[in-house]
Image (cartoon, rainbow, N blue to C red; front, side):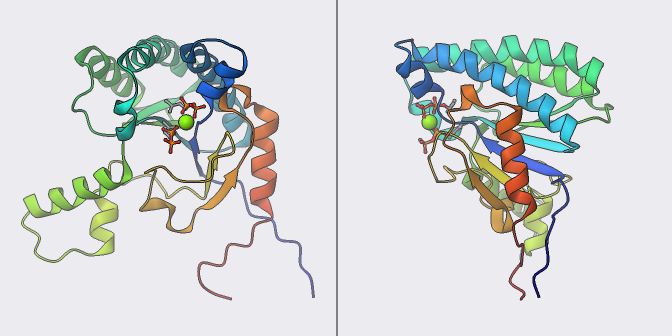
Length: 232
Ligand code: IPE
Ligand code: IPE
Ligand code: MG
């Protein structure tokens, strides 16, 4: 007997926004032009997620491994981030967006840290979409962070629940769906703990070209996935 299965809209979607550099390269533009175009794709995706009824979006903005990029690219990325943070914070008031940031503070520039603290604080009571920005984020570092917090609290034995409760954002549900753009099919140190039973969706589209239609494609693919969680 065949049964049409329809999963509800995910509460939490996480996205590895990849392909900015290749998008720029295809147009003979500097890599930073790709990151600028990528910031616009973020705004489109936020709107699409709100419209679809998603509660939380985690976006991988800068990994702990991205420090190995050229200094001027890193500087450009952080400048762009500062500008977009300002805009999101203004927008947040309009759309009820709540900002969270996940990652290690060290060695982020203090100007960025101040802006983040301000944006997080000023949006904390908003009840619309939660945007969790993974910034200077590494999943292995996150697990080590959790274990160190437990050791500091004097724990001798650690349970799975203990670790879950000491991740950067323990209050968020695990993402039902993880999307990666640009055709790469790996996690690149993203949400290793939380992804244990996430559905993975790989899109060939480069991140600056990502839009509502591509977002909908990922959602409709997710809708028909059989989520077994080890059972039959
Ligand atoms: C993703 O695009 C953005 C960041 C990692 C900050 P990339 O910059 O990795 O783009 P590609 O992979 O080089 O095309
Ligand atoms: C992953 O993309 C990190 C972000 C999207 C921020 P990368 O482009 O850094 O990943 P790799 O190096 O191809 O695995
Ligand atoms: Mg990349």
